[in-house]
Image (cartoon, rainbow, N blue to C red; front, top):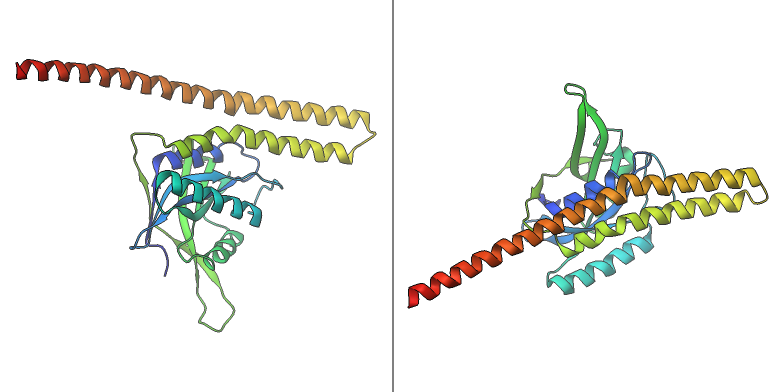
Length: 265
């Protein structure tokens, strides 16, 4: 039995999209937290961004340690939100390529479904252009794997597209806000690990060490300019909007209280 549909909360969608746009050189990945109802509909309410130990242009891998951490985080969120939350899917990006899952993606998805038949995969295709309009094109798909061969034969998995719905929200959940704020730290750690590995392999080569240091500095500055700064500005704008909304509601409350007093007198 496969999932009958996926409802993705708008704030979780924003976190996934921001993560996907954080780099166009390699794929990024994360895990989806949510619940599954009796109709086999997957409700995704938050995501966990994962740090990449090995940056690759065409694939991503999730370690057992990361799955264990995500399960623990889901339990914490379940207690905090008082909902039966767990890890219900994974997502990754496809920069500069089609949104459809590769053969490796389909095989990876099949292995996850051995643990949970409703486990779903999301792919965010970005850094592409629409040929008809020459404008940026963002595509998202949700899929599962289905075995086309009869039972008893070697499995042959193919993609099964699952209906995906983005659920609008008036607020930005605390869990998604925390995940969004975690993104700059994750990217900085990845750059630091790559710089450390490069430094260890080039000990004694002064010019190479200077070059690696310059590349690392450039990468961190690029992150500050293109991601951390705009992200901070976006959050500040949202805070300002929320403060204005609170003031408007306080004003409306005061007006209603005055009308209530006038009506009762």
